[in-house]
Image 1: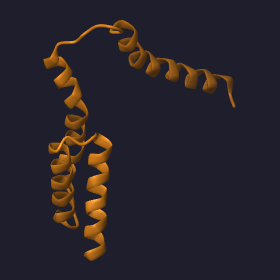
Image 2: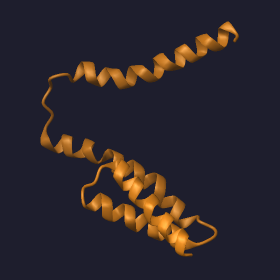
Image 3: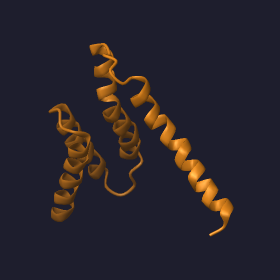
Length: 101
């Protein structure tokens, strides 16, 4: 492998590691207000919604795939499930729907 490619890969690794490591170092031991903790706790759900909801409206084949996936993910998120559980719930619901379709 070319030396320049290895340096670029290492540079990209450092550049992506710094924003992940910096909050752990800077905010280590700092108690955040409950409101900010609540906001940060809901960021993964908001991001997941921003990624999924546009796909519901632009589905070409069967609109029920989008609607069913969205509703199952919404119910799992409403019940307070972890983000991974929310995604797996939507996948499971769509798999069952695809079996009986």
